[in-house]
Amino acid sequence: MENMQKEEQNSSPICSVLQILGAKWSFLVIAELAKGPRRFQQLHRDLVIVRTQSLTDALRHLEKNGIVHRDVFPTVPVSVEYSLTEKGADFQSSLKEMEKWALKWGDSTQFI
Image (cartoon, rainbow, N blue to C red):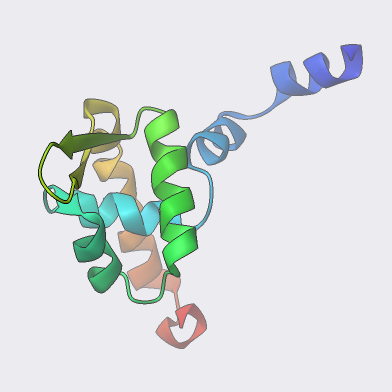
């Protein structure tokens, strides 16, 4: 138990970010929601490479960590819309820097 607490205290800020953001698809979800609020099916259509369950898991994780806001509308059937919180929107500058880095150093065939 004591070793675990020491590890948590000594972990880098990068590790904290990765724990908050979760899976690799989180970056894509955040980038898509930066364009504006989306319903689940809209997100799923726009992020065709992400499986349904992976998208669900990413959205739940991001919501739990205060990155994504989930709005439920009392329609028939119920409508759910996802948007970025202030915390999530604040991550946009980091995503832009990652994109710049990928354009400079990444080989696009490696990302497919």
